[in-house]
Length: 127
Image (tube, rainbow, N blue to C red; front, side, top):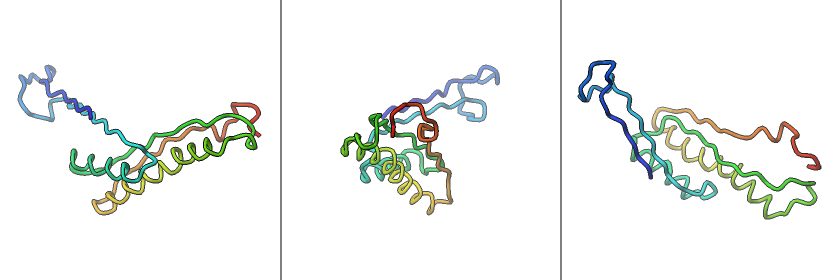
C-alpha cells in the first residue's frame, strides 16, 4: 500500500503551514493489490478502502487483458477463460462488492473502463 499526502502551506494564500484545508492542496494515493478474479480479494479491496477513507463514494474499474489474436476456432480454451475471468468476471466482482457498500451508505458512482477493440476491427484474421 502506498500512501502519500502533501500538507505543505499554500504560498498564494499567505499560509505558513496551518491546517486550514481550504487553503491547501491535499494529494492522497493508496494502492491496494488484489486478484480481480477472486471474490475474496474484491471484497477485501472494498473493505480496506472503507477502513482507510470511511466510505466508498466513487469506484473506477480498469482491469483487462488482451487475448491471443486469431480465428475463433483456433483460440485456446484456457486463454479464452482467462480473458473472460479478468475482463468480465473481474469487473462484475468489483461491482458486486462496491454496489453492496454503496447501497447501504447513500449511493455512489462506478465507472467501468473497457477497450474499444470489440467495436473496431484492428487485427486481421479474427474470424
